[in-house]
Image (cartoon, rainbow, N blue to C red; front, side, top):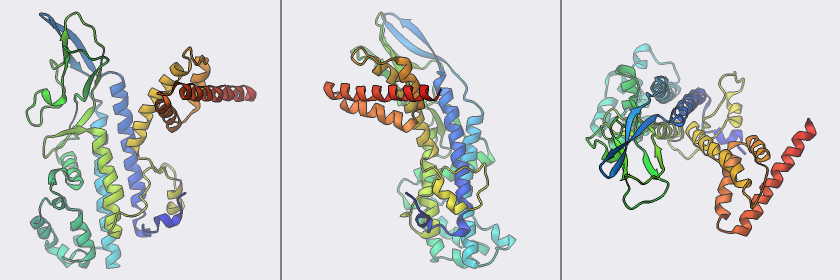
Length: 386
């Protein structure tokens, strides 16, 4: 159980960041829904092309990604950067114990410097160096220094560098660049003469290897052999500064987590060893006590909720089939109705436990019997209320 004391590290002058992060979470939830709907509809059109004694599975078309998706991505990333900028601005004013002048306010920004020299130049800039909180060696200045990309060897992959590059692109040039790529091809059964494409084998030029194109061959096998394939086509974002493509939801989840659990706590306290701010707060309603509202806010980020929802969708489809097997013999309709009443986490954990006991037939049948009993009890309870 969380208590108000868990958020003592968040001062009143920084409470503004909570609804901003909640807004980001809702934007990412919208992106997740759009991407899941897009991939569920099967965005790839495939055809079988025969060449001699070989048959190839080729891509003939890729459904266009909904235009709303890259724009929502850009909105989410821009709001993440705003959360950092607003936190820094509020901290400077708090330390000064006065409002910033218009000229001073224009110098407040969160830098993303690839090397130490550029950060030192940023600190020494004009009016910025005249603000005590941002003077070289000041506590806040050192916290900002610790968050800079040059603190890592992989400067280009640093979350602050990624956030800056993505938002600069969205603000000045184009919405996020998204494309459908090849994630993986899984044959339902192995065959010694079957070859499947790997993501990096398609047009391996830097920056152009991952998005799918008409004409790409995803699998090749003997002409008269039928093998079912599972093809994963994730939606990806291109990183503006490197050309690398990364799965969109992974990129968003990575940056959201870093801003919420690392960057903001460090700017405010100098440490990330605090109770993380919850991402999921309902900001469609007003909160008379925003601090107390933290206690009822959801702690699972949108990307994780989306993953859980996908797993639950599969589990809700599989459970009625499992429990209506001849060895169990449950009524499929009863099981389906019961499963639909369970939340996502419960459905997923139930299927997970089935997988754990699957190797022990006696234990498996015992557990499946318990689930059937629970389903019939639920059915009786529903009928009793009718």
